[in-house]
Amino acid sequence: MSEHTSCAWAPSKDALYRAYHDTEWGVPEYDSRALWEKLQLDGMQAGLSWITILRKRETMREEFDGFDPEKIARWTQPRIDKALTNPGIIRSPKKIEACIGNARAFLDGMEQGEDFSEFCWSFVDGKPIDFDETVPHGRTDIAGNDFHDVLINVARRHADENRYVMRVTKVRQETNRCGQSLPNSSVLQRRIDL
Image (cartoon, rainbow, N blue to C red; front, side):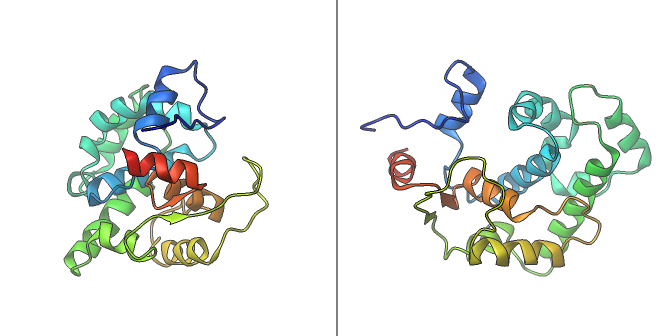
């Protein structure tokens, strides 16, 4: 790697944030279960900062059965109640119910022969989109582009029990996290170098 490109949202003094930025954010992810986990974590973030999720991620992985959709889809009310007693997770009944609904939708897709990774990457022809992002970080009034609009509409159609369908700006963040869209060429080159 020739040059270290950093983003203002990942403060260099926060080791956890910096490690996430440098090793995960924007790196293309093709594993279906890992993509599904990232989507669940993004849903858990609603109303919270991403660093909160990062700090709770390992405990959430333990509590949520390694984010195994087959296990989560079978959660019952006693299992939900157990999870809600864990202070190391995001203790929102609605977010937990959404995760369970998402696990069931994930499994339904599998039963219909749909690979979640292939489904997600089909919107970008299997490779990251390089956006030349010219808008300031944090702008929420930008509607996104056709790719994000299509993805949000598909998410809404498949939402069923999911009460945490993301706004277009959240879809943009999620696709950045999974390496499907990257904010500029310098970050894209850094991710390719990884």
